[in-house]
Length: 182
Picture (cartoon, rainbow, N blue to C red):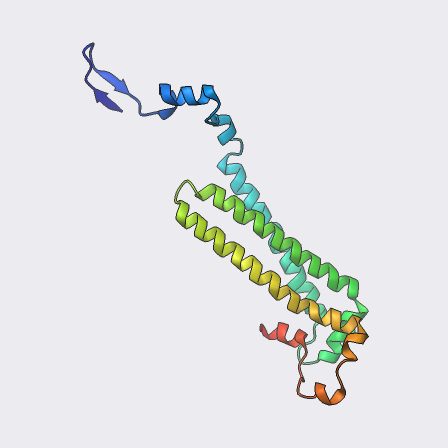
């Protein structure tokens, strides 16, 4: 509290901006949103929503990477991997869809994180948002690499463009790249 001097005696100023006449005038004119509009979602609720989205994303990602790919992809054996993918196309597509849902949850969590932290430091919050969306974009492009084995296996016409002699240098399939992390 700041104590100021006034001809009628000491005046106590609480420092609360919401009580000044200028802010009240802006609110009355409709140019400044009210506290109810600004605080519609409390930071606690937004943090909980972000945490729930993170847990949902972890569950979808673990389902795809841990269960689906672990069951269908055989390391070092591209032929058996393609046979597994062909035999369980629906399961493979379900895992791919789950991974896409994980990316969507991550995008919403990044937006909520930016909204929570932009008042603290706008530059750091913007950098974190940019890096988060860059990571989401890179992961979504990498998901195309994991979808290639299904497309090659399901569309036999695409493999007909390659002769057996041209396939000899390519001893590994895109699924084995996925296992190695390339």
